[in-house]
Image (tube, one colour):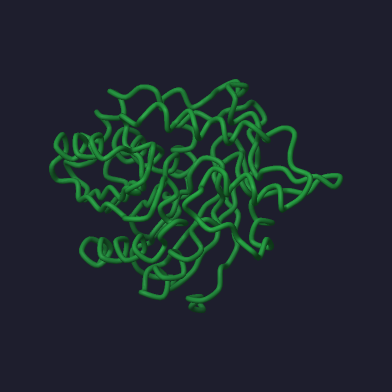
Length: 291
């Protein structure tokens, strides 16, 4: 088969309950795969720079749109439980020839915790948690929720308005001058622009919301199981308001085998804020745990 180190090859696969999910593959077709799981309200395109670097370094890089996000189907019965996100990933991982490294940002990290630490222990050869721990700061979580919910149903008049909203949420990141990239994060309907996710996922309107996120002890138990058999690294954005330095240190003290990287100049969206530093940390982890 051809080697697609520079090009993303789109594919579809069935998740649980018949939901259709979409992903991209880059890099070689053989070797330990690296599966990148985006955060809530993001899409697989948020990993572009890191996925390309991972592929160029010789690993198959696979980015997935979670249910209700990007090009993947929305759940007809509003099933956005963390366990359902995990079951979708488990269904995909079962099709791979080798166990993967899971790299999960925020929601993707919580999914990785539950999947690899409770649902299918041993499913991953390594896990990278990107600015997420079970015991996160509530104020930061509330700010994310408010940002996602504000325009989820009403949309925006223009891509400029989308860029303004993102810049207000991430003031430490320069506002983009080229707005074409934002088209991957929104859908245009009747002249308005809407986020690329199901509004039922935020605002408490889903029939089956991800309530497991609030079960901190359950997630801690999952991590305890995970670290017994699997290398884990926590990558924190130094100015994150979701994972404070104090809570990150407490997490690492509770699980002393967890590797820890604190990325200067990055907030919660570490891969987007400082992709260079983030990608270096990921490649170093892969060199040590996925060769």
